[in-house]
Image (cartoon, rainbow, N blue to C red; front, side):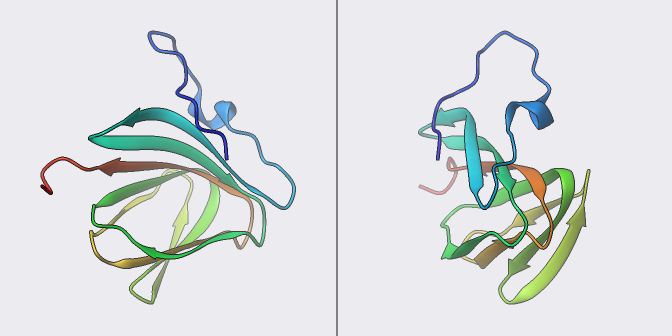
Length: 112
């Protein structure tokens, strides 16, 4: 996965900075700081991120397509424009039943 911040002080169309790649999950860093990260991520159909638990809240917004976000075993189906907050310490799985793109924002401050 790519890990470079996008250019600052320049306008971007976020849905266009990340491409779909066949049979892949692709991530592009928008901001990467010790206090948190913002990433644009694309998922090809059938791909997923395996279950994980993070010690921080994660804000996920779908910017293209439809996603399945599983939080503590409960499936949430999100469409373009919808968002969800995955609570800290909850198990999470991100699934692509069809292609989609999302923005993932993790804020680490306040958890020290």
